[in-house]
Amino acid sequence: MALKSNSPQLCEIIEHFIPHTEGRPYQCSHCDKTFLTNSHLKSHLKTHTGEKPYQCLHCPKAFSINSHLKIHLRSHTGEKPYKCCSCDKAFTNSSNLVTHMRTHTGEKPYQCSFCYKAFSISSHLKGHMRTHTGEKPYHCSCCNKSFSVNSNLKSHMRTHIGEKSYQCNHCDQAFSIKSH
Image (cartoon, rainbow, N blue to C red; front, side, top):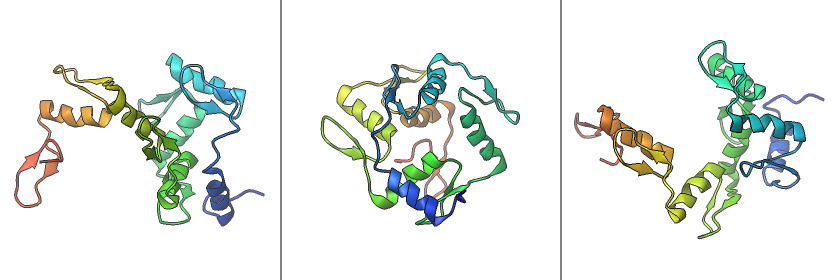
């Protein structure tokens, strides 16, 4: 039986699988990702070699995994087949839906081993861990500043190029960072 992307059965399946983090026996030797099958691991390994054989015909983007290209193509078509059961949001892939569902369930499966703060998204934990380690892997190419998260570097780069994306709600003045 095929399930439609907005069917109640699919929503139940996704909600059921959110808490499951075990049962992925194939671990990448380069990072902390694990996979259900060896073939998924082999596909993933291309992300570490930089090999990107799957080219988008609509833009310059290329991908190491064919399924990632298929998901990317939805950005050109606007297709969002994965719909949330609890709100009106829709997504181009199932993993983004699963991550989004955590906003409704409150699940935060990624926990800091230093301070036990928990996160719903693994990349948020990785960024947080850098507050403990002091690691700042994102370096400005214009000055000597470094940042623990890429979004802070992007915000900082606006100061160099003069982009002022944030408009004051009370006057016509604009700023390069949101906090002003």
